[in-house]
Amino acid sequence: MNWITFAWRNLWRNPRRTILTMLTVGVTAFAAAVALGYILATFNAVREGTILGSVGHLQVLHRGYLDKIGERPLQYGLTADEGARAQRAIASLHDLRSVARQIDFEGLVSNGDLSYGFVGDGIEPNKQAPDYFDYHTVVAGRYLDPATAGTEIVVGAELARKLAIKPGDVISLMVSTASGGINATDAQVVGIISTGVKDLDDRIVQTSFGSAQKLLRTDKASRIVVLLNHTSSTEAAAASLRGALPDLDVRTWDQIASLYHQLVSLYRNEFSVLGTILAVTILLSMANSIVMSVMERQREISTLRALGISTGIVKFMFVNESVFTSAIGAAVGACLGALVMGAVNYAHVRLPPPPGRVKPVLLEFALSVHASAGIGIAFIVLGVLAAAFATRRLLKRNILEGFSA
Image 1: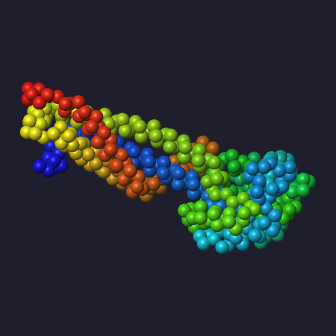
Image 2: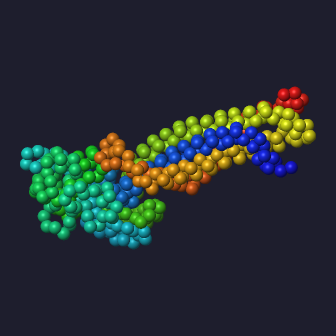
């Protein structure tokens, strides 16, 4: 006898209960698929935003720059010789997209009446990838032009509002130099930018790399940022650079971006709780359905056992019924979830800015075949466990008791 076919036919002896159980499984699978799709999309967005917005895939630094506190700015910065050697090594990478030097500095910015502390970035605007400007949006004026003589700056939107400045205004910058002295200069505001993060827009000031070096009176750089075409190439590129530059510090984006790991840890814990709740729901629903089926079919079960069919075969039949129910329900729920997530992605729905940000957030879901397959397999395993749990005692009853039930 084909017990799998027998189990399929038995499944539809009570179609109402079967369909209701499948619906329960389907709704749970839908919730799991949507939640997992949102979490995966969030991971991708934070990772790519971190890489493209500032960190890059790789950074080459002087040893100690990230780990030690210098007595003066750029004490542990890259020297001109180190920077030149690093750029030659970086140029040999196969998946290279862009290379740019950066200088970190801080000081005071003043409009003559008010002064505020700022965090400065000296960058090479002509060497930034186009995606960089998605995270540094010009809201007024223009961006930096490295060919322009004099010191040009762009400032964060919140800082510009506090200082009541606009493109075309001239303000003063005062910083500590690399030698420990003080230097000040007048700079022309050519643009107002927004990073989407309010705390950063409160303090950010950007200027060209050459202007920052002149302001700090140094030929050093804080880091060289390397952007690759594919994130998957990061580890291979890092290994290549570490071999070519053993005296320098080569860091990958995930070694620098602590926020990403904190977010991943938070979401994993949240999804673990949600997954546990969904798993218990499936186990109880499937177990209840199987227990009811076993109770209703006591005479059938006793007849099969009286004919010499082993208890293991009878249990295998119920396990197959549970597998069919959970597989069909999970498939329908996962497919429906994929359709809904695809529709939301196509509609480009935007959510209000979260706390600490000023830009709306695009609601996105990651459509992953592996994630859908994982959900299906998990639900089938839960169905098998539910069947094993529900039948562990009921099938041990005396055969004669089954005939009298």
